[in-house]
Length: 375
Picture 1 (tube, helix red, strand yellow):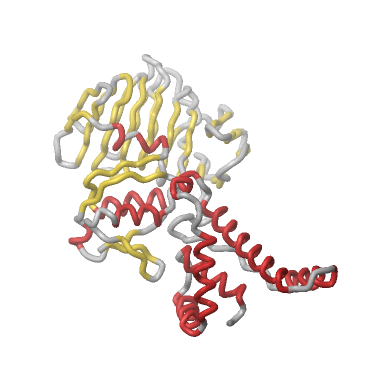
Picture 2: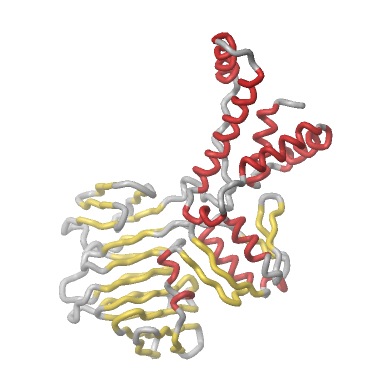
């Protein structure tokens, strides 16, 4: 049998779906020719997939992959150690062999589960300067005379008078989300693949305005003298206090859902007043419609959950692109119109979600050459 350590790596990559076509062909040849390799494959699978699936929802997938590699390196060392003579000479020999082996390159997790490291949250200042923020930890940045603070709860600002009133932009990449504290005390929770334009300080005596592309949940600080307005696609959402969700991933089809307080949704000459539990849809060349909404399908995302009910596979692909940073290739127009229902979690392994959807038997999701397809 060829180098057992290298075969283990190929088998681990096979489990995580990261084999290249050349590596897959090589592994197939090894398995076809070696009974020992086939037995090793069973051992690797048994030592890799052991944790209950429910535990995956809160785990760091890149750390898990690194742990799998570490576990199999330990298994390799133990098997070699058991074959060597006891004593000091055997230990020295084992250490020599271990350190002589070439180190593995950095493990590459499935791109469907982990986004590129460079895909970071970006803050663009009104003067054109841009900073790329780390995902975790206490951070502070200084641009001009403005200080930016980021902790586990909020991104907040301490601007100078000179920097206060220009338009800044915060961009959230796929798989991420961020809470933002505006100067008036309003809290904003930005969903994945969203962008918010805002000033560091609102003008005294004027309206409080922000511009949204994507989705955000707003908890508006009460100020009866200064209405808070979210310009979201072709809709304007206005309130003086309360909480609401704005979904403007499609600028020509916007949903505004009121959780507390009262709000007004307008588009051109159309206008609709909303109370808690109501939502308005603003769509191109259609009158504004107002209906009751189910929070599971509207605001559960702020708790790391997403429900989808009778959603087309095409729209499901848009959702997974934001939450998993993965493109869904639809094999035919008919496949894109099939319907799926279910629930996903922000930290869920994508392969678990694929299995869940396939169990519905209304569509089939599958991997081909490292790309996710639907048929």
